[in-house]
Length: 137
Image (cartoon, rainbow, N blue to C red; front, side, top):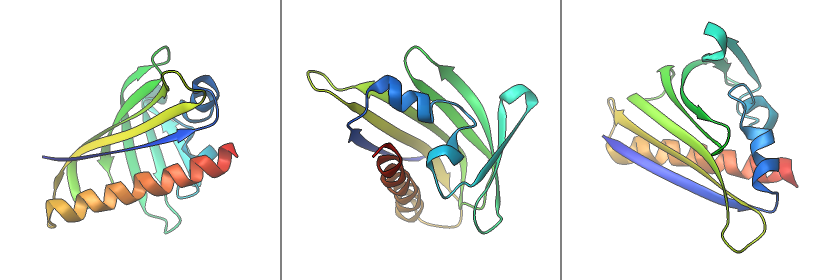
């Protein structure tokens, strides 16, 4: 199983960042790659569509508002991976203002090398953080 992690430090407080990104249905609020999100199964499943019209279905696996993180798995996506589980987490930065946002994932490549699928998800995380920084600016 492969994995990757990315992080970014932003000038907003952890609570401000979590208010923006902490909802399981909030991706369209800060991630231009995902223009729409629809919840089902009591808010535990989100159906996303990317700009190409491809459907991504994800299940909420864990949510902790106090510790500011949630984990989700991918049920359906156009990615060359299976067994994908990711976590988005917001932390305070010790001794500094601002917040650190971490996005990590583990997955099994399907039909591509571990390096290729890792690079794909690393790119998604990096693009997401670039968009987050612009949204918070």
